Length: 310
Image (cartoon, rainbow, N blue to C red; front, side):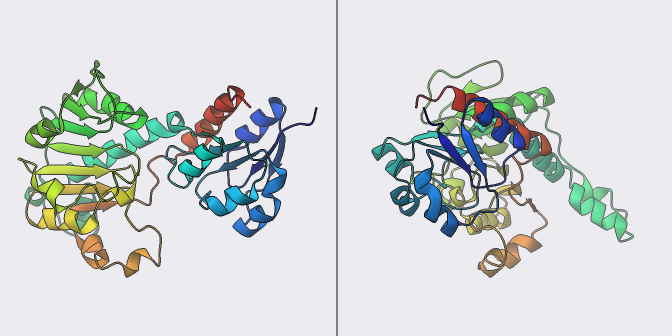
């Protein structure tokens, strides 16, 4: 019986290749392969492993005449045309368990830095200014943290921030009875009423795209610290900047943006205001991309590959 063939079309930790080979797969490791090259050879493969290099869309699915599965080395599935995959009975596996701890820790790092003015204070001292009063911060203890989406990353964030003595409430449209030792299940109405901190942990879908806009933010009763380490297109950046100017957002920690990478980011109408706002802290979509998660993601994928019914 011929071995099933997997094409690794992105930079994955060697643990995935080794694990797949141990399971009996014939693995072609081509992290630098181009999309055009994939289109030319994908018909020979039963599976493809991808991270973020390009979208697995209709064009690739049409060329992949014997494709049985797509392995996404990460949490989200937004660079895979899931509808077409479902129609063609092509299985999809991903690894949100592999980087949820990294995302949870990164979100807390953004929050603590914002609440304590760490970037501003550091820059001032380096430039000869010692301003204690201007850098007075906030404590987390006693605050109410609202989490939108209580999947792997939402749960990891809750578990980690619980130790700060906060009250954690969560809203997840697609889950029920998920209250646990860390969060209390709440409605969106309760989130907007009580939250001091709002953290997003939801996937990008048609429903969530541009979900956080001016109207969404208008409903919050208290000024909030706002965190997004999920997907940038969920949030309207200009709406966040307007809410900062209006005093509704005290600080925004954004690991993701609706337009990412240069030069496209610098061409956006909100860019200058974004980078010049002292109340915005930015990172380049690295929340789930640590040295540790790089390995763990591949290990999780191997476990799911082992259990995949092919």
